[in-house]
Each structure stands twice: as structure tokens, then as C-alpha cells.
Length: 583
Image (cartoon, rainbow, N blue to C red; front, top):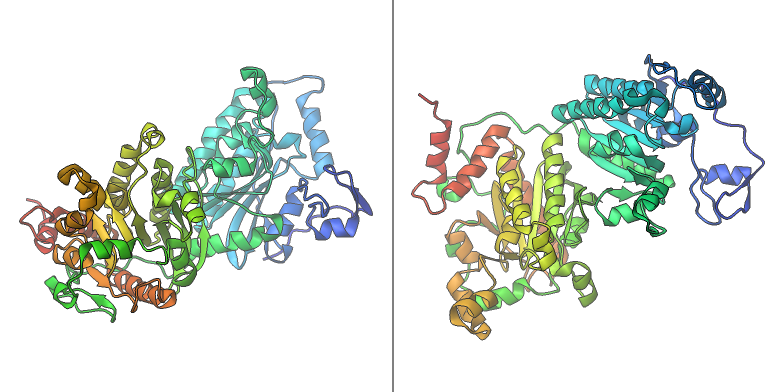
């Protein structure tokens, strides 16, 4: 790849930080990537500087794209619009407010569209919209990930309603990449407002942001004047928006290339086909003649010891048991957490993101409790809010787009039962997940690692394979809740646990789980590394079984698995019926 020769800037002798007004020696300033080493203030980069920092060895090739701004409205304010364009081109050395290029990031080919705020405030005019769209079409033609770096004050007023149309135009271009399964990543820099914020900057699969970057539709001053209220100092900052589920990650400038590379590798791994078709229904549980996979999985309930149900509930709730985050650090490699439901929040009870399992990328989503009182409180005791289920749904849709297998780890007493959860649509969020998981055409494997409570657990467990650790439990209601309702006495919880058949042996006998993962002596908390290894092998076996199924077969397999409950149909007969040609 040839490098376009772009002059960045003459090296300044001294730079005065606009935040703390500290003079910083020029070489130190540039070594620190234009971030003040004294106060941490991020300063704007030109498009050329940004590209040089993001791509491997600072080498990139400009895309040969044709688009130049016209003056359709004959617009004049204090200066005619054409004169403003001439001034902006002279000042920046760019033809427009976005620079489009090809490059590699951590070895992965990528198309980049990088905005430059110095060019008329990075405003979105017809030429900018055209260049963003052309870059998306280049990415589509080569099935290459698209990275958009935004820096904009909004739509370009001098082009009137034609500027507004660029929002829809660029949104349609990104929709084409969605249909083609091509990853899109947005890097939000300060500031990103108006029509850019309300189109391509927030439509990408993953939204990264620099610390302190501001993102919003209306500017702070406009909002304060409209509502006659003083807004908090952190309003519209990346940190503010991360808590509210709008952005996935805040990444410091020195780590941007590395973090971006991790995402790109997970999305572009070449060895990820679902596989060739095989006879529908082949290779399910031992009841249908599937060969036993690796050791550590039990498929015959007779091989599991009888266990006291209440004692099993207590073991499943043991705070020494590894949590989802523990397993993500031990059974998986290179977990990269993604945040937020893009609507209302980032529920801490649900964690998820890309990771690697036995050399293959997967999307992992799990419920997170904790080991201490502080952790449990921080994670809402593993009881998700609607935003948690919507975050999970967003990540599953991304997995579907990128053809990544989905792994879910279940450990929850149930969905959060508070008034605010109801107001935010808890029932709808759970129902939407059930439907979404039924429709996925990628492999889905669920493991109940501790407590599987009611619909709050099932919302992450509509899978092709459902496994459970030997001390895990799964139930329609907690034993305490059942005892209070039917026995009118919460103290009858042990009796209720026995009646509900919550233990792994009964779950396997009832066909609710496909196999039980044998725990180390003393339980998963006694030997977390052995438990992680058992989980990794169980997941690898299950995903290996599903790898040869096509997308439609995976969906049919999952539907058939749940179709059989309460029916005379078996999974195999249902699958055969579904595979027969219609007359």
C-alpha cells in the first residue's frame, strides 16, 4: 500500500494547553498525541493527524473519490459561501471536511472516513455526505470494515435542506453494510453534534469515544435556552453517555489503534462459516444417538447422584462460585466488553462483548453477580433491568450480522422486579429477547453457571444447546417465592425446591438441559481454573457439533428444541416434519 504524502504540521516549539494553559514543549506534546500531559485535556486533531495515529505505521492511501461542494442556494451571510469554501481549503489543505482512505489497523484492512473540524466546523454538506456514502460503497465492494471518525458541529446551513438529505443518504449507505454483514465502527471525537450525531456517527455497530468527547443532537446552549435550566457540567460527554447506554467504550487516544484492531479481528476472522448442510436432526443428544463428546459432560441422568434440592440451591448461590466476568477472564481470551442498549442505559447486571474461544471469535453475554456485598450491590444482585436485556439483544443482532456464534452464561435470581423496571417495559424486553433468539441463524449455546431464575434466565437461554453445571439450578420461580404463594410460608422453601425439581439431575431427566458439566470436587468455587477449563471444553464441544449446520437449520433446530416441551412431538420428528417439502 502506498502512503499518500500529507504534510501534518510543522513541529511546534511550545504548545499552550487550552485547558490548563500550561506551556508544553512541542516534542513532548506530539509524543503525547496532542493530549496535555499536565491536565489530560484532549485537543482536536486534523484528519491527517488522526489517520497517521490510527493506521499501521502511519501509512494509508487516499481514496480517489470525486465530490465537491456547490452553492445551490447562492447563499450569502457575512461572506459568500464559495468564499468560505476557498478559505477552508486553503486553511486545511483538504477539498472537504472528510478525508477517506484505505489502510490497515493491526494488520486488518479497513476503509476510513475521517472528519476534520477545521473545515467549516466539520459540517455535513452534500459533498461530505457523498464522500461518506462513496467510502461505504468501497467498503461494501471489498467487504472491508468501515471506520468513521466524526468531528462536526452538524449540518451545513449554507446548503439548506440538501444538507439535511445527507443524513438519510448516509444512513441508507450504512444499512447496505448491515445487509452485507460488514462491520462498521464509529469513533466519536469532540465535538460531534446535529445531523452527524443523528446519522452515521451513531448508526455504526460499535461506538467508541475519546475521553470527554461531546455527542448530541442539540447543543448545550440551545437546550438550556429552550428548557430554561442549567445542565450538569458533564452533560453530553462520553462519560455521561456511557452510563446511559449510548456509547460502547471510552478509549484513551494511545490505545485507540489496539482497541480498534481487536474489534476488527473478531469481525473479520476468515474461518467462521456456519458450515455445510447435513441431514436435519443428526447429531443431537444421546437420546437420538449422538456420539458422546469430550469427558466432563454427562448426558445420562442416571450417572448423576441424587442431591438434596435445597442444598443444591444453596450451592448454586454460593458467592465463591466464579461469575461471568471470572469465566471471561479464564475460559475465554481477549474479551472486549461492549456497553449500552443505545436507548436508556447500561445495566451492570448484564455484561457482553466479543471474545475468543479455542481460536474462534464468539459473542459472549452473561448475567453478572459478584463475590462481595459491594459487588452484588453494584451489579444489582445479578437481576437485570430492561436495558440489560436490550443490551443483550443488541449484541445478539451484531453477532447475527457478523456471523459470530453466541454464548450466554446464565446466573440470575430473576429479572429485576422493581417499579422502574416495569415502567421501562421489563416484560416487553424479555419477550423481545425470546423472539430474537428463536430467529437467530448463528449457533447459540447457553450454560447455566449458577442460578437460573424464571423468565429472567430464559431471556438469555433460547439456545441450540443448553448446558448446566452440576450444582446449578433452573426454575420457574424461586423456592422462597413458591413457598410463600403455595404453602403461605417462606420457611417451606426447601420443600418447594424439592417439589420444583430444580436440580441438574432432574433438569437433564426432563430434557430442559442437554448435558451437565461436571464440577471439580468441592464445586466451581473450590477450583475456579478447573471449572473454567470444563466450561471451555463443554462450549467447544457444543459449538463443534453445531458448526456444520446451516443458518436455517440452526433456527429450525432451536425452534424444534422448544417445540417439544408439552408436546408429543420429539425434536427429531419435529425437525423431520419441518424439513419435508410442502405439497
